[in-house]
Amino acid sequence: MRGCFQSHKEFSYPTGVLLDRVKKDILRLLPIRILPSRYIGRRSEVEAAGVSEQVYWIPPEIMRVPARVTIFNTIRLNEDLNNQFPQDVVERIILHEQGHIAQSRIDRAWLLFKSILTGVAALLSVLYVVGISLYAATNPVPIPQVIGFLILSLFLLSVFLWLNWRVRFKDELHAEQHVLNHLGEDEFRRRSEVFEEIVDRSWYGQLKRRLFYPSVKTVISEHEDE
Image (cartoon, rainbow, N blue to C red):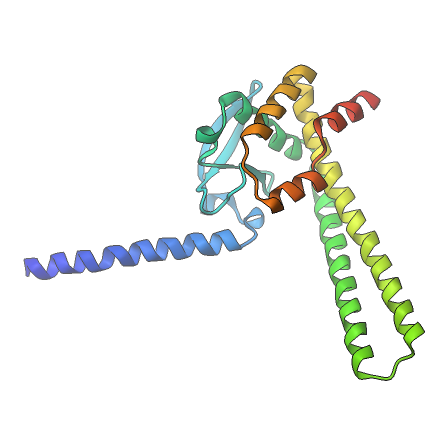
C-alpha cells in the first residue's frame, strides 16, 4: 500500500507541472492586456514619486515586457523587474504606466476605440488587396483597373497604418510627459538613459521602440511647447 501511494505521488507531480506550463503558455499567447489581472497576478502596493499604486506582479514566462497597463486601468509588472533594474529606474517605469491610466476613462475608451478601428481598417485593406490580387489572377480584368484598385487599397492601408501609429505614439508621449512632470528634466533624462542601457530588446522590440515611443529629446521639446 505504501509503495502504491509513493508511486501515485511520483506520477501526479509531473502532470501538475505540465498543466501549469500549459496554462502559462496559453496566457502568454492570449492578449493578456484584456484579461482581468486577478486571474494571473499577485497583487501588492508600490509607491512611485510619493504616489501609492496597486499593481499586479506577473511571472516573466507570461509577460516578457517590464510593465503593461490593461484596459481595466490596472498596472502589471514583471516579477523580474526589481532584479533587472535599479530602484529609481523601476520607479520611472511605474510612473510611465501611471501616465497611461492618469487619463480619464473617456480618453482611455476613445484611445481603445481608435486603436481597434484603425487596426481593423488596416486589416480590411490588406484583405482587400489580397482579394483583388486573387481575383485578377483568375479572371480577365483590365490591367489598368487592377493597378488602380491596388493603388487605392495601398493608399488606404498607408493612411490607416499612419493613424494607428499616431494614436499609439500620442498615448506613449502622454505617459512619458507624466514621468517628466514628476521627475524633472535632468532626472528624467538620466533614468531614461540608464533604462535604455540595461533593457534587453529583440530586433522586434527595438523596431517597436523606434516606431511607437518618443525619444527623450522629443518628450522634452513637446513638453516645452505646451
